[in-house]
Amino acid sequence: MKSRILITDFDGTITRRDFFTCVVEALLTPEDLEPWRLYTAGEISHFEALRRIFAAIRADEADLEEVMASMEIDPGLRAGLSRLADTGWEVVVVSNGCRWYIDRLLSKAGVTVPVLANPGRFDPDRGLIMELPESSPFFSPETGIDKGAVVEGHRRGGAAVAFAGDGRPDVAPALLVPPERRFARQWLAGHLQAEGHPYRLFDRWSEIPSMLAAPDAEVSP
Image 1: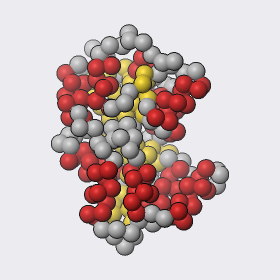
Image 2: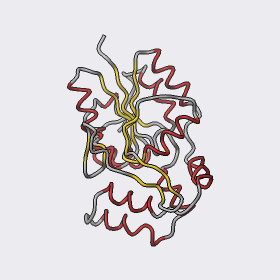
Image 3: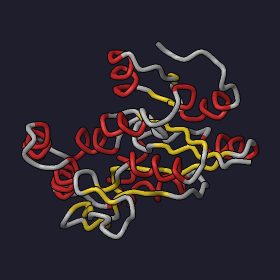
Image 4: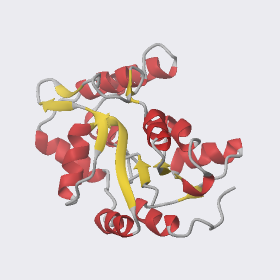
């Protein structure tokens, strides 16, 4: 049987909220967000904006644990992964965030899945230090990991690919998969709706396994 792979974003997709949003609310000042303005103005890359903002964090690890808890990882993640495995679906997490917090949240949830994300480490005096994954076959200087390249690589390998995401970097990879295997929420769902691209709306990541089991269900818009 042809392999089946769900490629999924992490922040705002497996979790309710992004690490970026939560850490801004809890630990950073408006001045710390100047790199994001530079990114939206096209002056620096998405990766560089996040790198500078995360490096501005001054806190101890306990503070960051509280931030990560506020992201609200889907409590149904473990059961959802089990159901996907039972129906022949593999899962790969692909993120433009930092693997440091992703690995910790997945470990707390008691799950192990492949993760493609920007490596990093935490130092209370230097913040969350995020680095470019230059050795990755999916390396992108803009975002660190090119999610579209991950999707395309599996497609070229003959896999049936599904994609789930919520934000701006998820547009290109989402459009590489068929509408019945294109899962979106939040900003991504609104963008696809506005552009007339069909998709399947989800609220919690753990809804996706049942939706994949019903590929003929109606898609939006």
